[in-house]
Every structure is written in structure tokens, then in C-alpha cells.
Image (tube, rainbow, N blue to C red; front, side, top):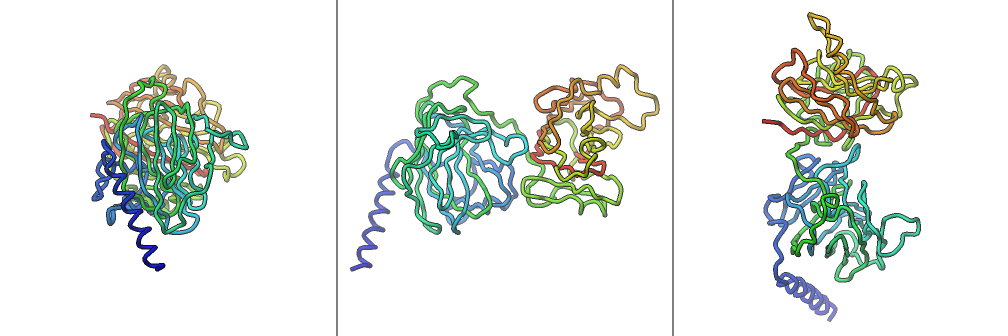
Amino acid sequence: MKNTFRYVLFLMAGLAWQGCTEEPDFVPLFNGRDLSGWVNVNGAPGTWTVRDGMIVCSGRPTGVLRTTEHYENFILELEWRHLHPGGNAGLFVYSDALPVRGQPFTRAVECQVMDGNHGDVFAIQGATMTPDRPHPQGWMRCLPSEERAHPAGQWNHYRVESRAGRLTLAVNGKVVSGGSESVPRKGYVVLESEGSEVHFRNLRIKTLPSSNPPPSAVATVDEGFVSLYNGIDLTGWQAEPGHREHWTARDWVLDYAGRNTAGSMPLRSEQAYGDFVLIADWRFTPEAEPGQASDTGAGGIYVRGSAAHRIAIRNRPVGSGGLLVQGEAQPMPPALRTRLTPTVRADREPGQWNRFVITLTGNQLSVVLNDQTVIDQVEVPQLPLQGPIALADQGAPIQFANLYLKALP
């Protein structure tokens, strides 16, 4: 009798899902065979794989997989399961294309996918949202009205409905949380990797008519940037013996210990580049010895692999982002030296993350640091035509993250 009852429950669940698939106008977000339609934003090749009709996430490194398309108003459904108690992951909507400064996550609204703590809806990394129920601590976070998730090892069903920035989340058939006035309210759908294996399947979406959001409510779009660092190891990078071991892959952070006795040598990309836009986050670490990060701490990024042309990273009054040109046969003209000196000190305090956006077209260089232009379209003398991206140091502990490059034609 007990086995018969269990079979009836299983059959009813299957029929319920089968009936759900008959709802019109849904299209698959995942074809069950490969990751067509998805972009591995900042993971290793093995972070996101396909097996038995599922998207399988290893959980390492912390990062995101996103759709190739933006979505605004929609009904989104998927199933997920954790393999182990306490597993953590997430479903983001309205997401930007790339992670925010110094973090592996994008600006978005997240639907929590955590074993034992599921169903929260909250704004992350600069997004905003008004929760349906005020959070006890005033956060932009709606806690679920009840616990409905099945334990680790069992499948759960999410249904997210989005209309003009109004969002609801149903867990296993019942709405438990939501929010409104989301900014942005149009962007990518994202699956999150956060430390533990998680499986996703039966991802599908039904798009609804647009509410014509203003540009300020639309997430950033894919501009062709490709990650140079996989968060697991130094694949794609090379260094001289005695130097490579001082660089360590620490999840989304590339860490330089600052105790190199082999002399200052850069960590270089295996691939050479000509014209490009490079995004690079960096910070002097709190572990730097007194005086290092505050006085003599320095590093930089070699332009086209040239040690004679380095974008400076240093916490000094002049600030970071200027170009240090060394080894010229003739002294640099004062006017050019001035143009290659940062126009403003845009550095954040040691321990805080900074973001470079470096554009090199021909011999013309521009550097933006923390959204402020510090070098503006300056012609740089004696530059090689191409070369690797190189991360240099001057002995102080330093960290890099979010290394993305877009090659220019």
C-alpha cells in the first residue's frame, strides 16, 4: 500500500510538470545537450558542464554563467538541486554582462538557491529593489513567507515572474517572495557558482510585452570581453622560474605574495595582443607590511609586454594609471611627460578594489581609473606592435581580479 501511494505521488508530480510544459509560448533556455545560448563569464572550462540533460556546476570558482540575451518582462521556470546539505548557488535576473569591481558577481536581483535558506529575493552589487515585506534590518531583501524547498539531493522548482520591475518567486508551486521597482529591470538571466556542486534542468522562459524601460533601467550589454583568468589556476599565463610560484589562484582573485627573491618579473599572458580594451581590477592587500602599500608599494601592467612601457600602480600622491616610459634614447619631452602623468588621483584606499579600463589603439593610449579618465588619448612613443598582457610588481603584496580583454580590429 505504501509503495502504491508513493507511485501515485510520483505519477501526479510527473503529470503536473507535463501539464506545465503545455502552457503556451514558453521556449527552452537550455537545449539539454550543450551550453549554446550561455556565456561562461568568469569560470574555468570545467565549472559549467552538461550531463544527462542537466547544467552541472562544480561550484569552483565563484562566478556566473549568463544567457546571451537580455530579458525584461517574462515568466521563467527551472529546477535545481544541491547534492550536499548547505550547498549554495543563485539565480540572478536583470544582470549586467560583467562582474562589478573587485567581485565575482554581477549587478542584479538574486533569487537565493541555497540548501536550508532558499527563496530570498534581494538586490545585489548596486542594483536596487523594494521588497514586498520589509526586512528586519532594513535590507533590500524579501524573506520567504514559508519554507517550501526539498532537502539536498531532491529537485526543487522555481517560477519567476517579471513585469515592469515587479518580481515574484514561487517555490515548488507557491509564491513566497518578491519585490518591485527593480533597477535595472532588464538584463541577463544568470546562474551562480558559489562553492558547491549544483544541478539545473528544465530551464524555459516565456517573454511578455515590453514596458519600454529607460536606459537607466537596462543592464549593461555584452561588448565582447573575454576573461583572461579562470579562477582555478594560471592556465594561459607564464612566468620565469622562481617567480611563478609567488602568484596564487585564490578563487576569483589572482594573488601576488610580495616575497619574491628572484627579482621583479612580470606574469605574462601566453597570447599576444595588438589593439585592445583591457579591464583589470587591483588592490594592495591589507597584509602589506607597514610602508609598502602606503609609500613604496607599486606594480603595474606592461603595455604589449614592453617593460619600457608600464601603466603604473602605486599609492603615491601622483596616483595610478600614468605611463612610465623607460630606456628611451632621447629624454621624453616635458609636454609628453605631463600628458602621460595622471590628470587626477583616482585611487581608492589600500585594501579597497580599483578598476582600470585601458584602451590601446595603435600608439594611442587612454586609461580610466575608477570611472575617472586619468590618461586621455595620448600618443606613446616606441611601442611594439603587439605583445602579451603582463602584470608587474615591485615587491609589495598585490591582488588582481576581473581581467577581461576585448581585442579591437
